Picture 1 (cartoon, rainbow, N blue to C red):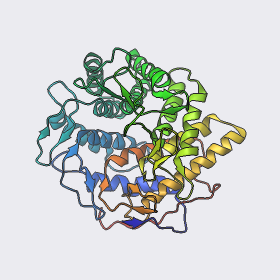
Picture 2 (picture 1 turned 135 degrees about the vertical axis):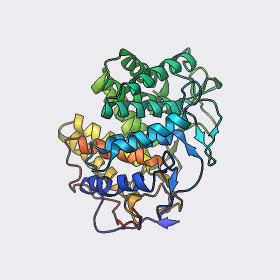
Picture 3 (picture 1 turned 120 degrees about the horizontal axis):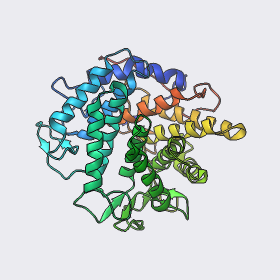
Length: 404
């Protein structure tokens, strides 16, 4: 395990865009790209791919990431990367009904499992951004066909969707979160009413079923009637998802319809007040239902969602509230930078333990989507979050990569 190191310069916006433009997109379009099709699941810290099964939703996430690259100033051939990922999905990643598969084995053969809502949400997201940057009508047709199939095979009689058509006993919030993300991406670029309807259904489900109004927190697992799972290993709260749903509800409010602001502000406050470690300055993975820590591990992705939510709230606020959210955004930027410390530029660590050490493991490609999304939201905002104003608890020590 590697302990987080400190350097002189805190990670801030002025580092973030060059890190993407000059390093990360290059690394993942070269070392992270399989010349035989698709993208590798993980890279080791010397930039070599791990030869293992691939989650097909990670392919969709990489398509999303490269569809953002041109907007973010990358000079590489992002269109080629988008097409490379989509071609791989079309050849190997879809079942006979047009659903995204779960995995492609290390031997290149599909792993046959029932279609999962979580995976389909990322395919819809990838199609939305592919359509946005290319204008190719086939991506719109594929998305509408997939939504039609989801309505037919996954719809739940009480609202929302099943995890899979073959499992009606356990329901999850997480796939709905990403389905809302995909719906809003389509709302932004399409006049088709089906996307607004989908977004509204999920936003209402969130407020009516997914949030425990007694404490204001977003829960994760539910029984078949949408009642919460109250006991056992599934009765926990994720700070990262409080932030992510907060960001999504503010986005829904801006694109579709009104939301009770106290709902998303409470989600953010729970994440910030209960889910951030003051010593490390990072959002941890899990809380118990009483909002105490379940364990202190902090993965990379909650830091990106904390940043997105803080940026969104700062943009909607004024006066003292805006200053508070700006400070929180700066702290989130600094916390994110901790994961880029002491590794080659364009790579990252994923799991920060409570003792301040990182788990020594290959770099997951799945994190790139989170990182790109957060930096994109920050870059598109009118906020000067990169300016020093909050005391940083994390700092950056970048290492030149030994590969490109």
